Image 1 (cartoon, helix red, strand yellow):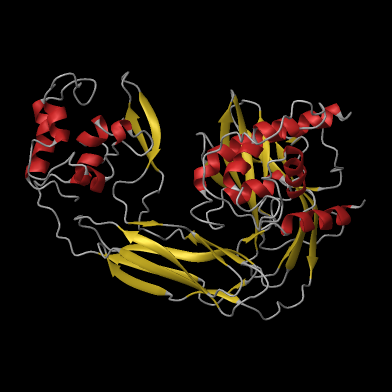
Image 2 (cartoon, helix red, strand yellow):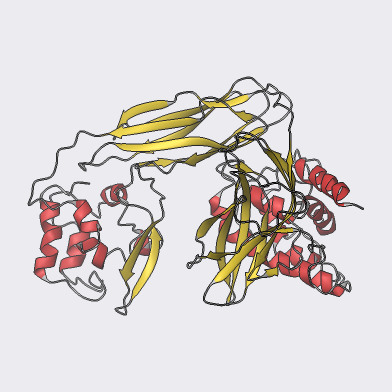
Length: 526
């Protein structure tokens, strides 16, 4: 079977699966039948231990015999579910499970840790099957004539962190191939996410993207993509081997596939990554047919902080009866407004006197959103995203949130592809001697130095996130103008069996005095 046939069959299998999930915990299902008799060459055991419990508890309302979902990979019959799972492909199933635009709130980032673990285990099972069936677990695709790129360093140091890597195809190709003219102003990007498990580190490689926004005279087709980590191809990785996508000139950040590859790495001071392309073809694509366009309803909007909820509408120019349209939004770099889940990185002391790095929610956030993606079902033309604005008394200049329509599946980006929200406030500047919540929460402040170590969104001891001001008020941990607030009492005395806060001991009175002064002045969120 030639590459083109394999690619077409693969796309037919993957393209017909509009997966729907229900949000439950992933536990083993008692209706699953015994699977211990499976062949050593068949990874059904790994499927039964890993993916199948997750699918049974998250997809069972649709992806079972008689259900509305295509693909019965959540069936109670383990053999039936396994065959459907292999047909669908673990990469596609995984990507839909963590996609916040697919079926929120039932899909999204809450599954990321579980899915990454399942993917790593499944990739090992596939490698064991390859060896069992007589393979060597080495790369089988002939890549001797593939087009290579320069290597670049992977600078991801913390588990769960991501990095977007870019190659300029005009400058970074080592071999343009026979007769291939220079590829002008084309940028290829890949997102790498670090995952550490069992004493090893892995890279999750996803979102291969081609950007031709600055190219006005060349359309480009990409056939086949593989990764080299530290000079070696990833064993048994065929996720993007038969990729075949063409991008029109002027297109901005076109995502070429929703799949992802898992790349194990040896521990070393610095890992490097390079790309290999099967073919890069300059061709003249036919004009895009007229069709539905995705637009923001408004190009810009101004609000006041504290206004509560803002609705951002995304619209289709015309209804589509035949298929769904998936739209992903992206936050632009010029944005100055801070989202709640902005991944603020802090370095905090621990109980032993050392320090540790944490990524926590921002205390000085401006907005929070329910999703950065929408799905138009057949014949739907309007979707909204809700932005909740923070209520605070901080003095600050206007903040800007800039969004743009990024990836679109099933339609095209229209003329109003960008949206800007200006968040104004009328709060006065604090007095010179005024103690503010912001001062207490920033490096050097009492809360930052002595409290955030334990009470933050990543390590919420006692159920308290100090950065969540509203939660402290609602739970009466903090009572404005009242130094009998539980927060201050725990910082000032050791009552009964409760240890002092912080656990290292009562703070000196001059340090506690900053908190006392802030509480007596109204404990403002300023």
